[in-house]
Length: 318
Image (cartoon, rainbow, N blue to C red; front, side):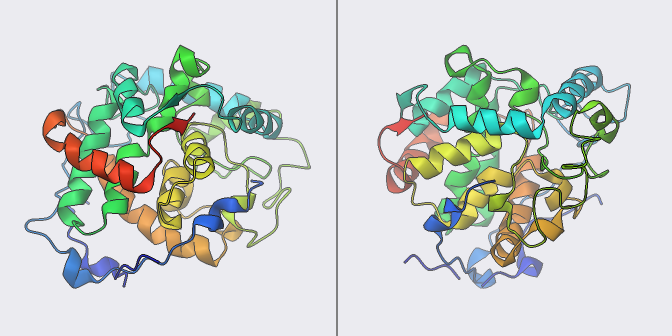
């Protein structure tokens, strides 16, 4: 079993300038320990003051934001249409992994054609964001290669937007995710749109725990369908050797109500609590590394190809 050294968030080198029905996740469980003395690198990752548009990060209320209307429309449609029954149907369809067979890097290249309309911070092709996140983490956590690769692949599920993979609407592929089958928490961005969701007034689904129970574990909770869950299914079903924390990051990196606002914790179990620490580390790089500064793809490609070979089969079913 791969060993890593003990987690201590106080030793992170990130500098803040301004303030389901699926129990198989744990088949891939590995111990991850972090020795803070081994993780410190020169300088550390500095969070910028503004996003690629010169505005505040994750600003969903500013009507002057040039992407505000696009983002709001995406969330309105997502909140109305992502019901418990819809998610069950989509998971069943996409867990077949019958859309394509290709390598992880080939999938990365497909993201050149994808722009996320739910993201108020970036309008660049997604592959550049993946490399920005991965390289920022690589600098601060040089020995955690599983985390570098996790950063590279965490958004690959956005290929759902491409015709070859169903050409799903933006609201069914991107945006913050949330549990279905229980009450929608008010911490969700654009919460007001949930009132038009058929599950909102359904007594089976509109209580705090709904169809779940406290401490049941997030692996037993259905999340709104999108790129997070799809990429998790791809990784798990293709036998990745990434540790459970890597799969957790992939599956829940868009679960902002949990990792940024502390909602839905009553559904977590002990392993979720441990993995959440890694997700919160990852989130800072995922969110704040978005910029207009490009990465030299050919320069870093050999390193990431070596990680793909280490943790994935040569050909992956999608």
